[in-house]
Length: 103
Image (cartoon, rainbow, N blue to C red; front, side):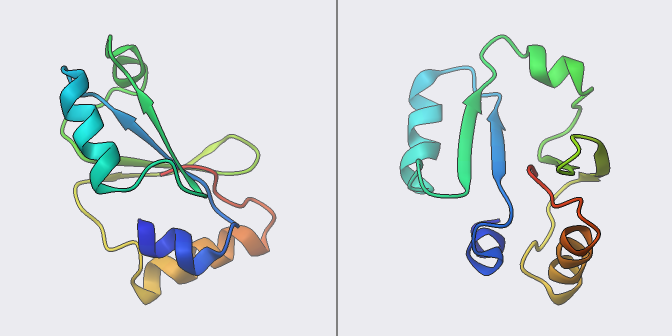
């Protein structure tokens, strides 16, 4: 996702929702991914309410949300967000005026 952010040059925003139980685990994640950084934000879902609202089952799960705040796609598991197909997908969303604002 970090490669996607870099390639899209500010045209996408990745919002990671951490479902870690312990703050130390969240802090480790933030350190590894050098958060905060432009185009990448993290929310701690301490009580798992976001996870329940989106029916998150197995991590990772990615929700692609358009600029109109409508869900465009839900991806289960690991994805190469810097692949040519992924880049083309995000470019197509941007071109139709529904630029993604989340994973």
